[in-house]
Amino acid sequence: MPQTAEREGRARPAVAIIGAGPAGLMAAEALAGKGFAVTVFDAMPSPARKFLMAGRGGLNITHSEPLDRFLTRYGEAAPVVGPWIERFTPADLRDWVHGLGIETFVGSSGRVFPVGLKASPLLRAWLRRLDGLGVTLKTRHRWTGWNADGALTFDTPDGVQLVAADATLLALGGASWPRLGSDGGWATLLAAKGVELAPFRAANAGFDVAWSPSFIERAEGQPLKRIALSFARQTSRGEAVVTRTGLEGGALYALGAPLREAIACDGQAVLTLDLKPDLDLRAVTARLAKAPPSESLKNRLRKALGLEGVIPALLREGAAPADLATPAALGARLKALPITLTAIRDLDRAISTAGGIRLTELDEHLMLRRLPGVFAMGEMLDWEAPTGGYLLQACFSGALAAAAGVANFLG
Image 1: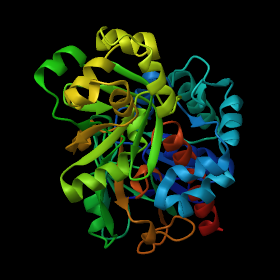
Image 2: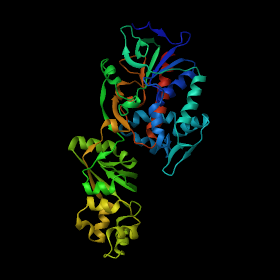
Image 3: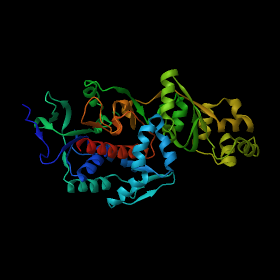
Image 4: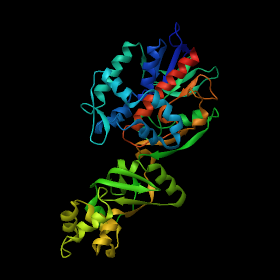
């Protein structure tokens, strides 16, 4: 039998935060610091599992580029997301990390990392701070909605638990990492309450290309460094990696939204690769013209332009023989090599999620219009951003905006 609902922290307004990822923990810190009784619930055995996984390859917390440029990374959602970040900027986030006793540095790409690159030292220091603020963390509590009296219901190892709270913050993530807790199961609970949702879609995911078997054998796992990718009048510089099924990498993710929508509409999208973006076409052609035509394509590219690795094989894969025959034709293909993308990878292979709660369902304080006292934040909301620190920054900044909304609601 479910236990009788207990109100967390009777002497002070009680706030229940559901989801112990970065957004949930940041909101917990802000609200506990204001004197609210805060309990954070999570379905997993330990908090911030996706945060820890993201840090395995180097925790990219934000980006150092100018704020006006930074805010363009959120596309159509920038008018909503931008004010969050203007109130808690990348510089503010770095100061917050420093306050946990962890220094940060700016990498060559402009991305910001903690010294040591790992998420676990930051998380340990953060959890100690939350404990000192009196935040209660309850793991293995899977949220299942509300009962008839409006109490929150949780499935736990000890059976169904009921919790009454003065305000609730939802920070349950998207649907791209089900094994780490972000399974999107909350969508049916909110849809049943009339909350309008945009369909979940993969974001920051690889794309499929119909490579030939011989190219896969030669090129799988090989990097494409210092390239520029263009689609729909947008250009992204960076790196990508050839995979068995196609391409992935940061330069591609920055164009992910328009590529995904084009494939959904037309069945494919033709991406243009500039393999030597630091030189214009005239300079590339001039250098190629100096290379002896009797030499192999591999040697001409290496000696004239310093291009090695998978580039010769990629040109043969994506260009006709006539495109490689003369310096002018080869230069044109180096500056604009078309690659046809046929699909985006499945949602469970994506780094993040597009879709979720439509922004129109929220008021200016991030409270759900149909559910007074219930707030939502983070990747649950229908916004997206490329990798590079933009995702985490918006989750942190949005959490503080939601926490301010709760404080306003509770007076």
